[in-house]
Image (cartoon, rainbow, N blue to C red; front, side, top):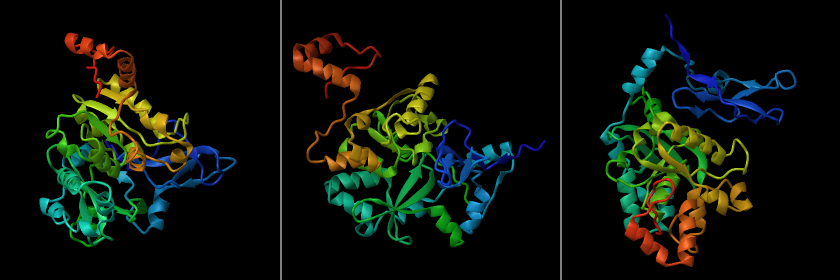
Length: 352
């Protein structure tokens, strides 16, 4: 029996996007079955088959880029075998990139914002590298809980610390240069290599840059990144089921079902039903201005902008309630400490 499955499929969720042809929010995008991530924004099909009929399949997309197109994953059994026997990079691959930071725009941007000792610690923890053979861009290595180097995402930044349109992978360059013959990418959360080292509350953001920057601002949390909005999957976070998790989505249009906050809110509820100790922060939703939303700010953007004016602590909504009560009656903290009181969810009440 042939259990063949397609590598690229139309997203099965009810999420709809703006069609690049007719401008209506009836566009369904293609996703990569192996990574659960979208292909390019124009790759998909419009539901308005009669009045629009736009359909740009993955095959045409890859042909236009003159890249190899493999539409079929041989069979389900082989697929899961490939996942188990994923490709990994060598330690030598990684170590060769842990230098040339003077040419790395992202690291130089951080040097203008934070102490050198903080940055050195962050680089040591997250193993951020420099792609000297690719515009001195930043390499965010994905290293799992077993210290296996699953992949290296290469992102190019401007001198102002803003991401450019250039993104690549270490294995893609190796394949192009014929240094390796094949590579089976199986992504994990960025920063997953640190979960045994730090028994902190885990904060999950979208981008690797945000995780690095927020680790410099608030080392009370262990900051991990999904790599994309759609990168928050059960497959990636199941290893964290016994840990306390807080999600910090990027900004979007409030109330829109497709906004990062609403998408991760649905994910948060789904994971909570599966037994995760997880919550969603509405910090950016409460604090952001129209300008922040228009610019698509994330948590790092917000705190970098307010670096010299905002207190360096993050207080979630339920903590703020107790802090407000404390400001009205200072004896409340003594009462809570003596009787070891907890909130309605069984969490310890903290004022710091």
